[in-house]
Image 1 (tube, rainbow, N blue to C red):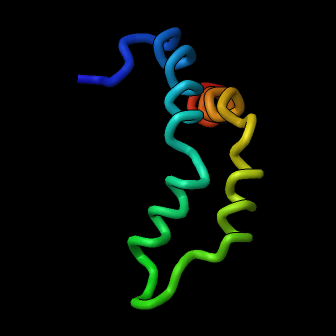
Image 2 (image 1 turned 120 degrees about the vertical axis):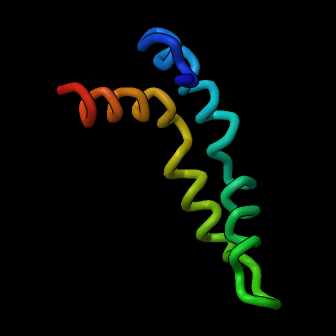
Length: 70
């Protein structure tokens, strides 16, 4: 079964989920899992990720619409 029943559900919920899950801390945690023993993620990489995702939640939906339907 699909996660979203309609485009309206997708358009309404994806930005919320994106804002909640695409965080610098989630990125840091993911990098920490795959880091070689004794190494940690660089702070500047984590901050660059944060700057790259802040305010982009609505663009995710727009990009998906263009990629899949236009």
